[in-house]
Length: 232
Length: 261
Image (cartoon, rainbow over all chains, first blue to last red; front, side, top):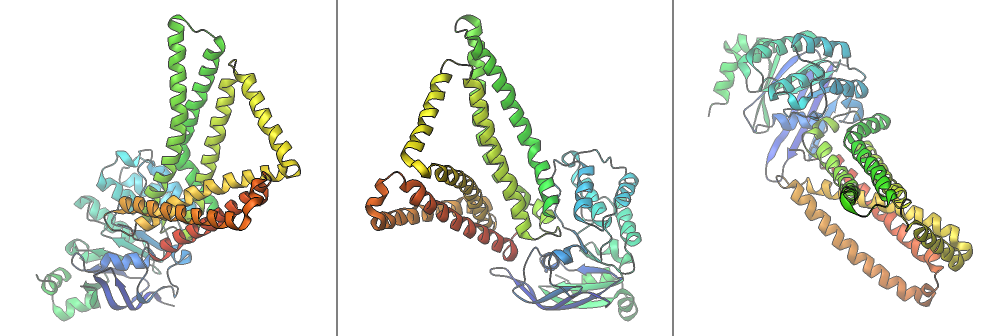
């Protein structure tokens, strides 16, 4: 079984707006995939559906062949675009929290990464800047041995130096059975680590191809192609 | 997983509530001491008055803070950005509700017992204490006298009634919040609105139910033993039914209609 995520005619409507319209998408294991599209194109909606934070109006979404439920949540590691950790906690409390709830959480790896980024585990989240909180969240999420990582805008709020470290972390931490789905519009920064891209526009998947194929066929970078496809 | 949720829920709530109970305990002991001294003149009377005042405030604080914090905790932890963490844990929405409900119920009971204990301790140092004791003895005596063999049933039902209504109060807030979160941009306002609407519905239904039952049961109500025999069981059943509805509603909305910002 090589498929990790399968969407069949997936449709999600908000009261007046169709966020995802009849999306068919199959993601294989062992890839780093960019979910690329302008603001409001449906990226976050798709990621929220994968994580069971929303329920689709019609169609099917399967992770390892199962609809989102507590079992699939065990194998999906999700980084939302929000700072979602309770701010009264210390960094070490958040590590204990993850250790308690996720069997695949590697505590040692989390502490190693904290040390590398010179973050003090005894600090309260309240006292950290927004970018630092995002780093802590990313460390927690990437310290899991998940099958599917969903990273929603993982590099938006952090400085370029940390950005490089984070991207390296993503590449070096995922294993051959895992897939990383990264939603972003900062394409130039992450282009070099992507295996595949999914372009999404107004709730439709307009392109799903490997980066190598695009480069050889179109002869241009993903960033350039994106700017052309989504030209305003 | 419920055990782990409970553990973290206790950790998150006790960091505020335990210090609060500690303040109540300290002020209880201080007030007991100054009242026991029986000094009603001079500078010492002012100090004792001040301590009594602080004590009364601390009792009010325990009631208010416990209630508000239980509600705030549910909203903050599940309906704001923290909801992204909680609802993506490998647990069912019902387990999230259970952990919150159990801990909230427990804190409400603990705060009630703490206040009662504290009042007994403080009043045991005053000259009123024998009178209060006699008053309570009289109440219990009257209950046994009037209810006879139903007295034990009465106490059991009273206990169940208290627990079920504590849960009822909490779940009514939960379902209101679960309804309120559906309204984008006005989640708190929506929750308050939902709470008011539910209150009005409950009021109307209870008045109608009361009318219907008094028509059916008529004169049998006049006997005091109707309390444990008819009235308490009916109220308990009514509360249990609404509890089930609130719980089911909250769980359904969290499962199918979650709407985090």
